[in-house]
Length: 289
Image (cartoon, rainbow, N blue to C red; front, side):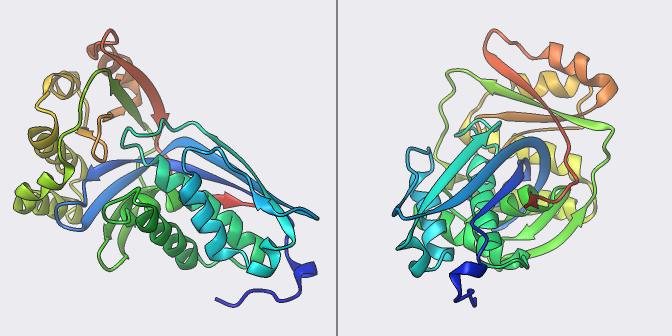
């Protein structure tokens, strides 16, 4: 990538807003996955302050954020400016709700905006995915998660080749209920490959457009290996959810519902043993200015 040599032509600040996502089909088993953009957001502002040197610290993803900044911003800029970062997130970290992908995407998008007025989506995503692999916040690089956060909608990807196979808009009359169960320990995620053939079947359902069937199958498979706790999923399905699954590797459980059925599904989940979040579906591409 060619950067502007004349630092006076660089943007000295930029801001980005990035959505989160939930899983339809986990990509660990086959390197092919499907995800859905949701309205929970990450906001990042980066400002370059001349006369000082350094990068803001004390983020949950310090290592990841640093890697992205040093991958995109020219060394000549980093040697003459302090990189001030303001980051806020509505996405709980460590629950499988793609918080790392949303953060890495947002920081990458802002950095690319600073060095080049024209944004190349592929460059933004590659920087985020490469940095996630380097920082070991993802097993596969989570290209599917990155695409759902960046583009919104229903996403189908081949993570191995970083190929966006398809993006479908999602019905905005739908909503997402997210259940954060307390005291639940995650199993060994690499064991998801035991069900490789069945995850592949779930993936094929997304290709046919049967996203909610795929999501339900993904939920059963993920639960059987990592959690063995079917009760919340069964209750959500019995209450009329379209699709229910552990998101990512969990432990968050996501249920896609019709808005007019939201209260019924919510009341079926026991809030004594978990926290509930409500999100809208998101069809809107990330923004930067």
